[in-house]
Length: 319
Image (tube, rainbow, N blue to C red):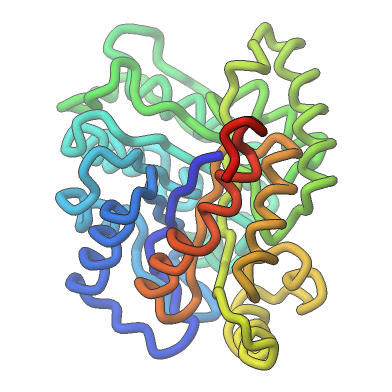
């Protein structure tokens, strides 16, 4: 299992929203050995939210060789042409390190903000992914659909990666979502606060069947678990307060569900959850500290990651 970080774009309380904070956070993640950095995407939200693609560009120089992810960018809300242009620039400026995680988004407010019918999101999303691929291909047919057409559109300069960044499809694990992942995607981004190890494990098996039906090799298909909000503390009262006052109000999920899914509490408890997800087939987890962010990255690297790595190592190499 590998570990990445989400950029701190969401205000869980007293967030600075400064370039210095973003760059310092990204540099700390790189120094601490995290292998990827991700930026989420909303136009409007119930709490302040910094623009994701802009933030990802802002930290490029601090990320070294880390893989870059959008998790998830919204091609329907932003429009496939503007998003293809922006992501091509990020891929080029990063030397080909971008993975384009995309999804339709679950916020009706984002759709209302741009005047698009929320009920059309799935049909538009399916077309938008095909449009992204067509816009990133040097030579190939244009995409012409009901909602979008790339006919006659040439975006230059192209991405650094031939054919464009790999496209990872976000899905909470429904049957329809997994069919989209298998049919449209180069990888699957699941959501930590919408699953459990047992649910993920079953969905991963189901996705394998779908991948075979699309002529893809399940053993070569990557996955990652996004939005693993976390706060490491041995103080039960502090953990409860973090969950009650910071996380639950921001994401509108019951505290009981979030407590079961997320890494809020002692390091050993967090590690046990990650080990269960690894046993279920999760390959990479993106953590997102909800307070005291850089110190939390340090605690994760020192207290949680070694427990996970040791547990998953061959018995002969464990310490």
